[in-house]
Image (cartoon, rainbow, N blue to C red; front, top):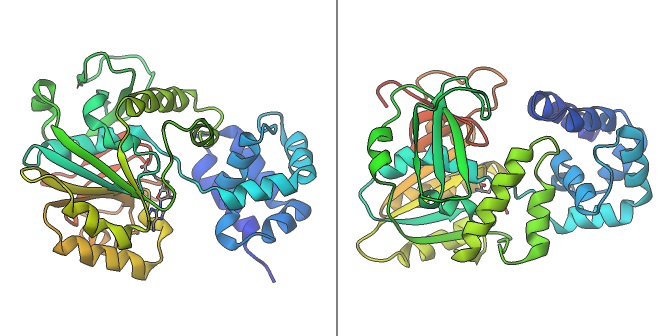
Length: 338
Ligand SMILES: C[S@@+](CC[C@H](N)C(=O)[O-])C[C@H]1O[C@@H](n2cnc3c(N)ncnc32)[C@H](O)[C@@H]1O
């Protein structure tokens, strides 16, 4: 029976790696046609066969991911015991502080101060939106391309600057220059929280950054330095089992804001619905930033579909969509009238 692992790798090559990582595009395409490697992958549970997990595990173990397909393939097959053990032990937990650039205008529009609660927090690097610098660029401009930003502001002396190309009537950008959101409490939940003080955990996060994306690696290292100075409260557990308890711990006088990005896709639809029902009951606000089809109530209220194959996320406040966002926080396209 066809397990579909070849299609999984081809889809990854086409939809995720193309244009972002020529290295991973090639490895994924070649893996999809390699019967022996597919057979090894099919020995793992379905949820553990993902390309990102395989490539991250090989990098973590010091294997060759940038030396071409034959080197990667031979090394991986020869060290399959170690590679598969790492894939079984670890998860794809990419923690992308860049997503704070898309959350910031919404956070600034809520009653201050804020108590932030992130579900699916990984190491909690998105819990520090008040500690980064921001450069909002004209639509279509990528980070590093020449030209002035439209808006630039943020925490003085921060080692992390987040670039985000914006379009549409993004709110609060003028007032953010004067004042960032005031965060008085930060807490997170994860099935497997990563500890910014633990070298091995941070090495795993680095292994998950794609080879060509050196700017993301620098950003990660800067954000880890910030979080290490004041590590967040991270609770181990399933988000449905723990979110109520954590919201109840938020300090009085602060607005509780539960948020998540790139998390709910990992849950089956019933668990997503359970979470949505809980969020409708809890005090405060709920910000979701997920692939467009992940939350049906958000998807059905979108003013127009996302461009086909764009991989954009839908950003929503209390289930009302406000913008499409780049999956790593690289763009923010605000909807007219949102
Ligand atoms: C792709 S990472 C995203 C991390 C972070 N939200 C960000 O945007 O950088 C997804 C995280 O969700 C966590 N996760 C997945 N399912 C979960 C669940 N049911 N309860 C809690 N955390 C979960 C994973 O362990 C992982 O750390």
